[in-house]
Length: 292
Image (cartoon, rainbow, N blue to C red):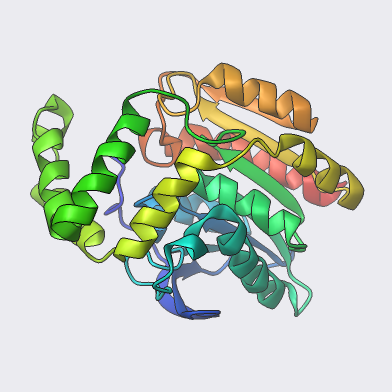
């Protein structure tokens, strides 16, 4: 089984950020790094750099440097106390600064955002981030549609305000215990999920949650930005995604004039559900971008 605790060769590093350090996992490209390209992986709501653990070595083996980060306020990254600064726009400007520093020595940056991270990545493009390609994975055109995930956000906001992060985590565990899949998870992985959530800054949980509930449709704006800069784009999702529907993501790809790929039998997290299938989709696309 692939998960956030899958083994990898990346080293834990701290990168400079606007609000302090940005925690990251970094793995060098295998070989002589002739492509001089960094793949920057951005997690979603309540996520972290470890979400990409199963992907790190295969991407590095293909000749890319890999950097997976915690967004500000997530797990090991420092962040502000103002929840408004965790909406996609402000986080996107922080991400654009980081990309600029990575690209300062002539490296190309291929940017991938998962779920909420996709909304942040497109905001980074709006902020002028110099990217060689953009991948939106299991992400949508705007706020989460009505459904279980949005309901959980709305309930969680009230619990977080009344009982804090620890009370919200107790609710998370009660919900998870009702699912057969959770019961068979290794205790080490359950402990990781618990510790990660408890290290989240409350302002980050509230701000990102609001971003998921109120982000407007900015696909047309992104299409203009990509077209103006000549930046290629890929939209990829599972055929059983339960956040934004595959149909909505396909429509987004068409509006962006982007490539579109669907992974069979996969829900909202291809990075842990089917990382090898995902990698088989990503690598040829990225190589084509870099060689064009």
